[in-house]
Length: 397
Image 1: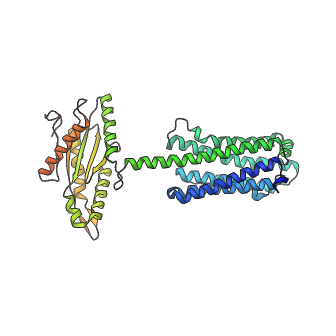
Image 2 (image 1 turned 120 degrees about the vertical axis):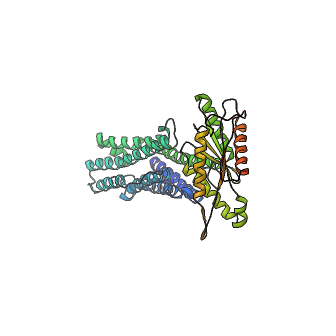
Image 3 (image 1 turned 135 degrees about the vertical axis):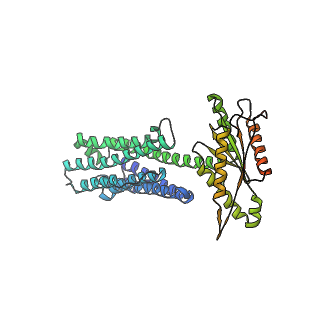
């Protein structure tokens, strides 16, 4: 059968085959990437519907069936819905209903010459409108979600697709006779358009792949920075946050403080109730610390039952007040265990950065020494460290 097809129809079959392969790959991706299963399934649906539409065009180029036109439109709508699922945007149906209505209206028109032109305007216009929406979704995500300097780059393939479809609609409106003739026969326009569509299809799938890879890489980056049990910054990420804060305050002549926090008698919790309860206690304390701190503060798990809190802009007096608030928060909210509760308390050491001459290891050592004193004094209390030279800092209570 293929040897009877024109060059235009062969090009359409090639695009259909490309989309069919892409559909299988996105289905495989939906099976493998559980967290993005719905979005990837929609992208597989997009590629599958597009494949069927291109096959339909190859077989009925002179008079495409309504199911073929609806398949192409459904592909575009599935693509947009998948992107919106991926980026977390609201899913509306108004635009989709209007696009389907335009295609159904086109199908209801007579098949004479003037009506064929209006059918082309409505069909290509509806598709162009959907791709304009896809472009807007990708642009917003690149700007607000990925923080790209040039967000239009991510939306470029969809923009080109919208422009190509809109140009087809405009040509049908301005020169209905020539465009309709080109659409219904083997022509240079159709061959060039097929090649352009092939490039656009590849660019669109590359865009979707870039979205998926950026999300997966971001998740890997987060996993590398986060403690797997509590979700807090891990030791390495906390050191990086402290380094960045030290650089910032050196430029701005500001200050900051750190808290070193240890859960009291944590070994007894593990011994008496088991490690599962101990893990729940760690997650409970982590939540309490996070809820009580400001958005600009940073909290990390340094290991075991020990936590470190970074308080930008806080002097020693302010940091002591925050530490006391955290201590009371933990003491006042026991963690639930079965039918009972396990009361917890924390000891906290506080240290204020002594200035540009102090390195972070010395700052953390002073906070740790203050924590050791708090535990030595009976636990469930807050102790402040003196300055790096052994003298009390201004604001020490």
